Amino acid sequence: AQSVTQLDSHVSVSEGTPVLLRCNYSSSYSPSLFWYVQHPNKGLQLLLKYTSAATLVKGINGFEAEFKKSETSFHLTKPSAHMSDAAEYFCVVRYYGSSNTGKLIFGQGTTLQVKP
Amino acid sequence: DGGITQSPKYLFRKEGQNVTLSCEQNLNHDAMYWYRQDPGQGLRLIYYSQIVNDFQKGDIAEGYSVSREKKESFPLTVTSAQKNPTAFYLCASSKSSNQPQHFGDGTRLSIL
Image (cartoon, rainbow over all chains, first blue to last red; front, top):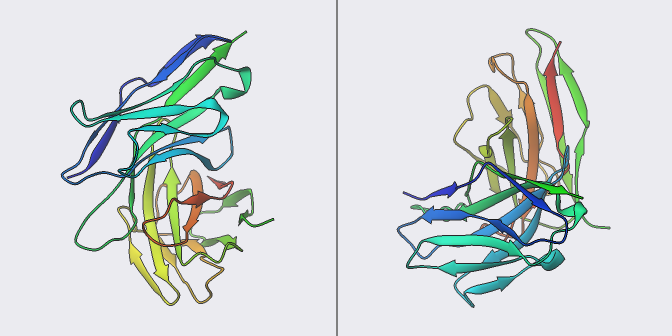
């Protein structure tokens, strides 16, 4: 069975300092992994995706994530936080079952707070 | 601009009433999805459709119904059988089932 766990429900950083949002996954197959961001009362926007190419994935707005198979992790990082980064972040794994449904399994979300 | 449009943005339901949430996309995507989001939780899949005139139940389909008569449209009906409908509802679409999903801005449903 596939699952995804976001290790922190809330992360607070100061503007200009690094961001680390942690995610572990469980999958019997080679996973497709995603990070999405959600601003209040908005839909989800795709930040980046891993689909078995390069293990270091670069996304939009300066975010990147590294796929580590040995640790079953896909942590999201950014060197320097900006006030506009404050939002909810979701780590997501694609479900692989008897039919390719495209079903996504979402983590519980991490709220990123950026202090001035 | 191409995208996904959900309407209305806010919706109120009375006891015993069915309400329908609209989702329209002009991305020419084959697959469409409905999710429910509750505070402090990730998204849960209600229904999905991989092609016109076909749809399948997701993890929490009870109390909901959908139709997919046109490629562009995937409306969700919240029936009176859904006893706890208050939530944020998100519609998504993708070119195919193995492509990333694009999301609308959601509809917030509340009980009067």
